[in-house]
Figure 1 (cartoon, rainbow, N blue to C red):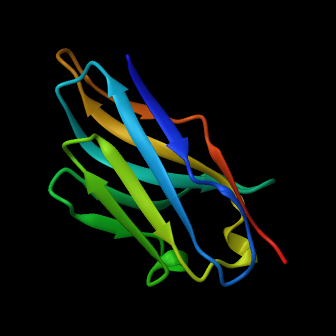
Figure 2 (figure 1 turned 180 degrees about the vertical axis):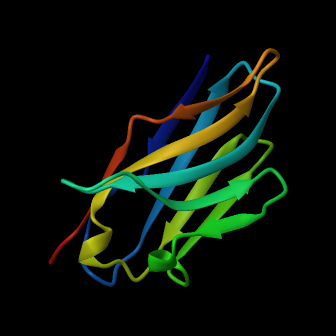
Length: 119
């Protein structure tokens, strides 16, 4: 079993910054990719950014140039620096990890952390 623990959400004014963190713990061989998804009320969950074990990154067009994802493989932790936040960035942000285990490769989710951008 793998557990993902997120932190760093909160309330920020438009134009402000937040940094999200997600630490993976448990029993696994390796983490192939980690990422952040978000879901706003009434909307589908969407990919925000992802990063592979070789540090290849992918970003949603709406956050390119404002968000930066990074990963500490030794600590099994992923970070996302969010700058120039907009009201439309408000959502619950979920950490995601694709984890290689002895018998299968599985996807795990964190519990979510609320990000609210409002004046």
